[in-house]
Image 1 (cartoon, rainbow, N blue to C red):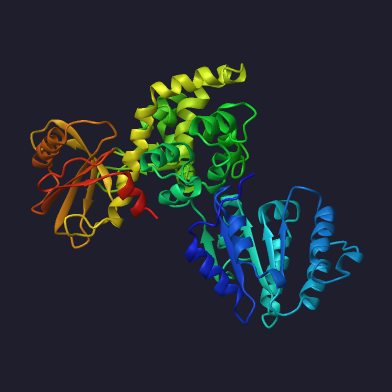
Image 2 (cartoon, helix red, strand yellow):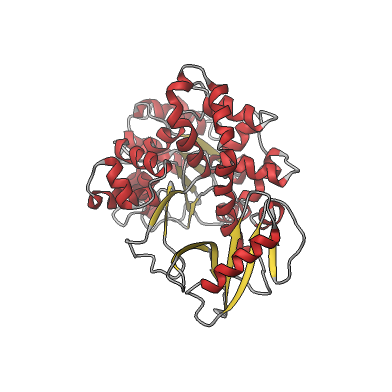
Amino acid sequence: MTNLPFLNRREELGRLRALLGRRSGTLAVLYGRRRCGKSRLIQQALPPARSIYYVGDDREPALQRASLAAHIARRLPGFDRAVYPEWDALLDRFWAEAPSATVLALDEFPALASTAPELPSLLQKRLDQRPGRRIHLVLSGSSQRMMHGLVLDRAAPLYGRAQEILRMGPLAPGWIRDALKLRDAVAAIDAYSVWGGIPRYWELAATHGALDDAVKAHVLSPLGVLHQEPATLLLDDLRDTTQAASILSVVGQGAHRVSEIAGRLEKPATSLARPLALLVELGLVRRETPFGVNPKDSKRALYQLADPFLQFWFRFVEPHRSRLAAGHVDDVWADIQKRWAQHVAATWEDLARQSVPALRCHGYTWQSASRWWGAGRDKTPMEIDVVAESTNGKAVLLGEVRWSDGSTKDEVSALASRAANFPEARGRTICLALWLKRRRRPTNGTAIYTPSDVLGALR
């Protein structure tokens, strides 16, 4: 397996190292979706000479204690010669004998706590009763809901004890060029349209020279590591995944309004509020409202899959699972190629909006961008791909995103027409921009951004 260089995460790494260098004992908590780099960050931050790193699993508590004791024995010789009948005895001895500044990192902590529910309270007791002991504790987990229940919920024993709480998300899109050694920015957008910002996916992709080979081997093939990935993600946080998987499926197949989702599932729309909110909380679904509309407005809200990999999987893998199970991987890839440009265009549009706050366009800095759709000044329906307000509130940026080759003059003309019909300007200066697949002849008054610009901004 190819090991990628440690990319980005500079702020998280700096905060964790600073915490572990303090003179008093500390607690750090890391959580987030699986494969996003939590374990790699912990291992990068741990001081090797004074750290114990242990990954929890689903074995019986006695086996887990014996395994952890063996890891501790590498720093405290003889620690594993005793049999610890309960966690209290093991932790008591560790806290009493571990040298000052020792770090105990418990990765996949929810797995440990699921077999030993008393563990959070026992750790809390040591943190509270022995503040003078300079023992650093790092807890990490992929089950975001369990980490909330164990550490971040007000009723949790460890609530309020952590000096650092790091929620790990995907890597910034611009780093995919470094990870996959892609000189061509267009090829990087293609790759990001499959793998998104999950570093473990990048690591798998890096074992193949071509994108199609990597997709066939790891995603389309029933033997591929990522063939069942959405189910794996849901199992981290849900006992019953049926409803959540069904919602992801219909959203991925083009149902974006609550009424459309409910219709396809043959359920009342009111029953979907909580499961949709959960999927948004987990970072798997994104709730979208038009620029200028109150985010709480449920009537105009749309739901999209928030992750490029999930968009790819539900668009191309799920509908063809029977064909893929029958071994027709090459045939399915041929069908994917027919819709490939449309798929990448949607990812490119998302990236264009993400890039806006990092670009100084028309001399302004900009707030987060969103889409706008609705009735124009002339009462006819229209849509604008990118809309953002300047940080000083004096200007509005309107942009169109294209992944096909066309006439810049025609695109500028169409954008100017939409801008004139845009009802949310409210006396502010209108600035225009195009996001294009390839650099073209500059246009008077309209900024142009390409994949290189966007990926450079998103680092």
